[in-house]
Length: 238
Image (cartoon, rainbow, N blue to C red; front, side, top):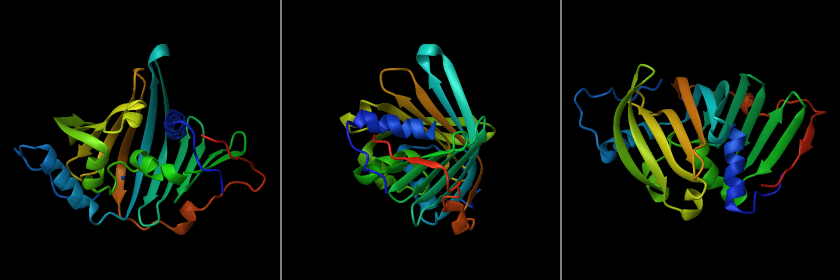
């Protein structure tokens, strides 16, 4: 087991963002519905009640303001709620695997045959807010950590979505992430897109989800470390 991630909050949040650098039978969109924060959150709660697993295609876009550059990577994601297991398998432009099992997080880079191992420790709840924001999350938990505002309906890649803006209540979180925008798909009541805006820089991480499938059976083997036995293992500290 790797060391617990400790140190200044800034170091930890930087790690989470760097490490990251689901169709459900939910209710149909209601034509002419006048949405509010409470009605949108109510629909998300209804979708969360039977949430068990998720698979999706995922795209990460990391934008850096100072150099006006956006780096992209894409792949697939598998999530199983009951035992807090998640795997993201990036394939483009370079292969990379993120595997989370409970408190343990591993990042495998096959190009250099190296595994970085972390223990989330007391920061587990904070990691969940990034890795699973809106996927089976009860909104009462979101309200504990964020001020939530409704910013209207938007069409996103042919999908009708509701845009929610989440402002962290914790000063420590706001010093790293000033705001989180979440586009909720009205056909599934799951996130279609998330945008994490870093404080004081103009930098952001944009995560897009497509081909979302909810509650499919995911074999246990999907969440097992399947990298070479001769891979180098390191346990960096946050």
